[in-house]
Image (cartoon, rainbow, N blue to C red):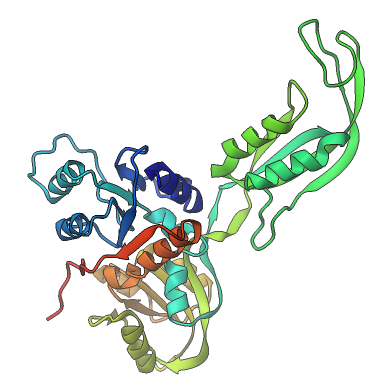
Length: 364
């Protein structure tokens, strides 16, 4: 397989446009045209993980946390990042990362946490906004099915668990071509009226170029009229965090024990218990304290995340049980998401999970 096949697929399934502004997801090291035969999947890229990939003959490392966050001005081996970059290039080892965009997708990091906890009725905690577009175009009646199908194949028309969603209304279009035209119907220099269908559908913003390209490829007109509108609608199937319900309510201490077992988290930090029953659970993998207000709004009894600062615990205000399970513990299952995505598309591609425990934090 070619590296570009893998990177382009992941770019599409875990859209790069979903990542935060500070992030650096995508292909970080490697020539897109290089052939690859196997990949090592990991949460973090460390020197030990890099050595493991080389020893096992892997051509690419696929990680959740990116190796390169900031620009490198030199590669002299003075930092961990520089040493890994040098070693990867020297050994023709590609590196690809899906970070905050993997947090955002419907089946992302927080959803995987909810799955591990057997939560029910799971929904996005903080839905993503401003990433939906509406396409409106005008199609001659004779070509509506062909063009509609091509637009859908490009990824437009998906609303949650429904696809091929659109609206069509009949009308009459008009045009007059000058002497340099070759009209689909009618004569150049003469006014022509054509029975057309106004076709409307939605798409995620990162699909815009692909969908427009599909439209232009099959539309019979020399000049294709279309409009693209940004939508203020929330996308309830993409965003940060999630919230769901336990099958049965639990006492707080029993719940904390359950969380510790599920995530193998040996150093839980949490706010004061007050005898509440835990039923509604909000989660966010990684540093998710910014979603505390969303957890309040979602009527959660507990909010589980990581990297909570001292003063953040006061913000819980005894209204919610706030639990810090650790960054590594909250995101370690991201490797399973990446594995499932890749193997679904490339079932014969060799994939390995890293055997290196990359958590830099130890508990005494």
